[in-house]
Length: 301
Length: 301
Image 1 (cartoon, rainbow over the protein chains, first blue to last red):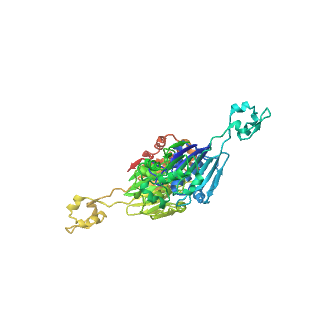
Image 2: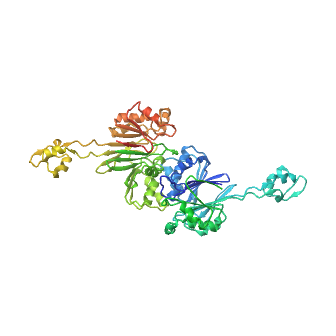
Image 3: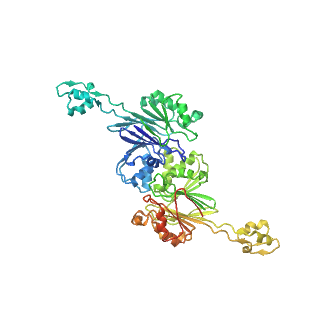
């Protein structure tokens, strides 16, 4: 599981910081999450192949999370993309994009599908043989979803020495990987646990930005491998968090601790602070496994 | 007259080239022309004070000329702008911007005025005591205007030694500057030409992008100080110019020559070419005073 942070700063773009966008590679699937202005340039800078982007998830319609989407969609057209593209985001996103394509007479020459979200409850919005994606309802000034990406459990691992010892036919390997007991070439019923080992534990990634402190999300993200949780403010400005429906670093850490995640990545830093190190200092008073997002940073889990 | 090129490359943004946007300072007025994605970052990089931008002119609704507008308007809001902002552009631009502000529940807290253009004839769209701005109808795939910025003639220059010699009262200086004949303290009528010199010749700037070769614009831009004319293609790709309604470097130079402008700036270069020097080489076969635009370049005339 590989996470590339293209941008992780709040709202006002500055010369050297980018608004929210990130690329998650999980179980060989690649997902773009949020798409602030300038995302297409950051994708190039980070050498992400445009053709690998087939699914884009937009948390909410504040500009720092979506103003780069129309440009990316248009650039795909200019590059003669043929692969279909799926966009998941709040109701309204289709109108925003199609209005601009219509007025510029620049319809895409590739299939463009919008999956508009309206539910205030979590829902499964994507599933293939390797990954599922669920929404995580968040609490922000406008309708906002986080996203929970989960690997599906892989096949059981064959213990090849045991397989040979019990004389299991090669045509049965697939069944064995699926956890089935099989009959050996010697006519003996071989219990699966004698010839396989458990698959690696499936990894999961929860993206939660933007949101006020919302403990009700904890059951859904319990034991998640990695949680990206916004931390717009430090304690010194904590009185700003509730009215703007953002979180502090300590609030993000409280969620991580209660949800028992393995690692918490902090992001969506307000650009008012000269350094982001203080976010880590404050959050580690509550939870130990803290990482700081930063533009261009790559995490591998 | 000072022109700052924020971006001058066609469509597809690359890591190190920006789509169209430029800042014109003329007679102490500052105008933003076009606003491709990333313009707000380039404005910061080039240290243009946001508060000085009060008028934005959008040539047409192709993304590489306008996708940065909504982000800039939103950032002004985040910075608690109070000054009013005027946006001049094709019909539809108001709907594009207001839809996004509505869906993000982020109305501006400063007055935002749209001046939508529909005329296919040139029209005067801005005038104050120092500058006028007219549209230059262009020929592109969608409705497109160039813009002609003209200084108004300044006051006549007082020849202070003559003024003293003819004993003209200080209360009459303003009338003298306005070109009037006045009566001196000695009761003598003094013809204006004896005590003043002509003002500096008013400067003018014509922005013409994007457009096919369109000689019918020549009478309007005749004798313009500086013409910025798009030159998307080199001769090697000249067969692409007509169908895409763009121009070649040589076509831009032909317009400049016929219009007898002082200087031609070439821009809107296709990103297919490894270097832009060839644009100058080709254009100078037709017209001598050629400059090449480039991102971050500043011209003073």
